[in-house]
Length: 103
Image (cartoon, rainbow, N blue to C red; front, side, top):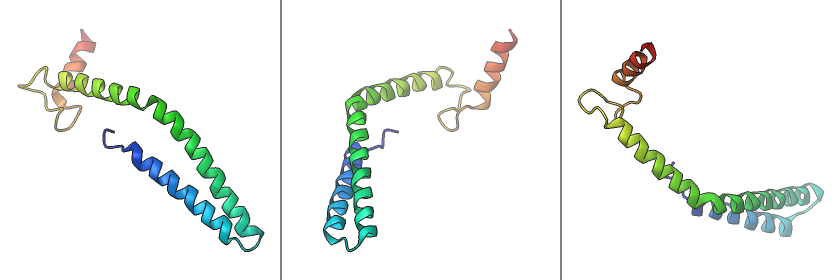
């Protein structure tokens, strides 16, 4: 998830707004006019959702870092047998979990 670039989302919304505006100017007939209005509504909806996302983005990034740290601690707790860093969950960890449930 850390590869999500919120700025790229904003640029896509801006491009949609511009395309909707151009489509409105070039509209010939009610179908094209309706299409331009639909694009503009979609851009407004996307902008509203982007605003919500941008308000929680720093919390999300903090959560993601914390979750990554917890995963790293989990993976390195038994370095001689665990291979979760390659392909989680590894057989060592699933076997350990089965033993914990049996106890």
